[in-house]
Length: 454
Image 1 (cartoon, helix red, strand yellow):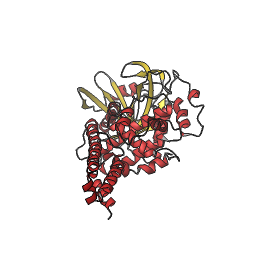
Image 2 (cartoon, one colour; image 1 turned 30 degrees about the vertical axis):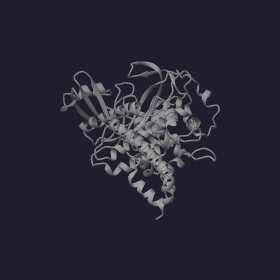
Image 3 (cartoon, rainbow, N blue to C red; image 1 turned 90 degrees about the horizontal axis):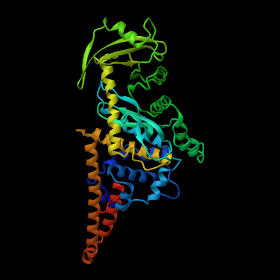
Image 4 (cartoon, rainbow, N blue to C red; image 1 turned 135 degrees about the vertical axis):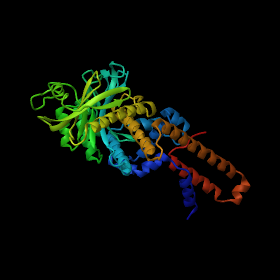
């Protein structure tokens, strides 16, 4: 074994980069090629630039700060050009990487644990008047009013321990700040960016079904699809069933949408007819106590379904399951996990830069949101494979400290060796020292992807 190999083996056993290890496990280079991230004759490798963006997010550094503090950072224009490139298929990159991570945690699932796909949407405030895809009036449940914002519809994976971001789309309404024609006219109609922009006027339900179909076609596996009352319409549920995905949802109490077969055609009618003849079970959610019962009902479009009527003493909530074999208790317990995505959105905003994109161009917004979700998935995976999972916030801070400490320590170590090499007698007595320094420097950069100034 040559000197280079000895040094590389020693560093590999001691200098462990958790981010790079995960990317290697999921064969990220292959995923990048499948997603059309191909290096041109000039410029930098896409993998290296994506790795730098991941470091910026994990180490909580702005792009300008990272460029200033890292010896191996590229010029700011290299990063800007990268996220504006219309050829890259960011959606495929996110789906394939998420599917690869989910395959690796598959052996960790225990019998009886449900794997869930969750469709939801979130609103990210955007004040700029020229941000492509933003709207003047988007209803915010958080602020209880309409605000200037991006409306992001997302598909998420959740189980008893982890949450992963699988896909997302931006939905634009009639209050759009810029017409679509204003930011698609210069794009080739076959480019990935053009295809991504063309979907922006579709309905949320259409976007959700398309995301579900893409995820299933790319190997994402789940037991149930969870949606809230916005998406819980007969046609949507029927399409999900056709894709082989059972649905659990909360139903809107809409007489025009939900017409059941039989004497009682509305949910209120069914509830009143059954509440005295069915045994009621009790439960507790936080400080709220409730009673519930379930019944198998026939629907004109969906056939036999199971409804769960839950009463808090104040409100009546109705849940549907197209799988009639599970109990009402399981339906309620499963639907509660839909709130996992709310914590996911919170972590994305607080830790991974979602909503802080400083870009007006649609392609750049898509790229930065994807990078936030991709980094979230990596950290979520690292947390999952540990024997004692932490909150993502705790792990995020640990990784931030670990990466920066490694980079600074190795840089200082190489500087010390370099100073030693300048002592004439030492270099004369040990001809391999300069070679050792060169190999250490090159392999450290390879393992970390960057070097920090102390």
